[in-house]
Length: 109
Length: 113
Image 1 (cartoon, each protein chain N blue to C red):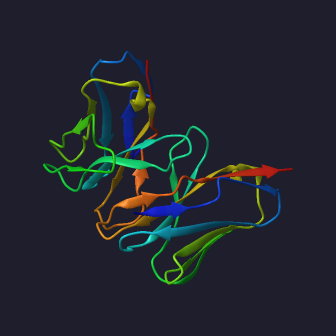
Image 2: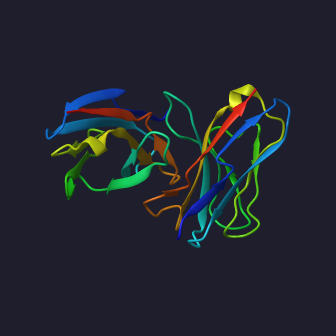
Image 3: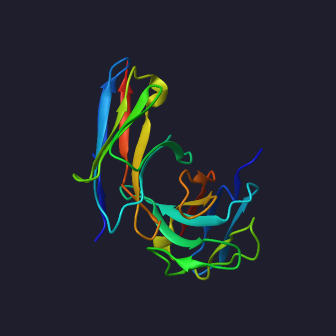
């Protein structure tokens, strides 16, 4: 079967750095996505990786290792507004997105 | 403002009733999707449409039907609602199935009692 694993919840301090991991087992691979979802709101696109390596976008970076079936999202200089759920998703061989359950990130002052 | 509009925002529905969730996009995206999101589970695909006039079944299609008569609209119908269909429903769209960056609607919170 297809599976996306990520931690259920993480806590970090304002101004710090946090890394959210995601491992996946899917039938085929056509890219990995990270989305941010604030409570009661729709998911919004953060990043996309299709080749191995690090993609940096401001305070957020995303890393992919296809051979290990592994990705992480790195958030730097954490702000209170970063408190949200972070969803990892993989596009499979049929170009359908398979979603993880999300990681709830709690930022403390 | 370009995007996806979902209606209603929330609904309480008696079991056995029929209900249609509406989804309209103005971005001329070809592909559209319906997901449900339940606590502790990832978004699960109900039905999708790669282009107007075609639809396909996702991971959890039972009890739901869709139509895609034109590019903009993709309604989701529950023929006879059951309590297990209590969920938050998101409609999404993308330019094509192999493009990245889905755009999501704001969701419909449905409670079946």
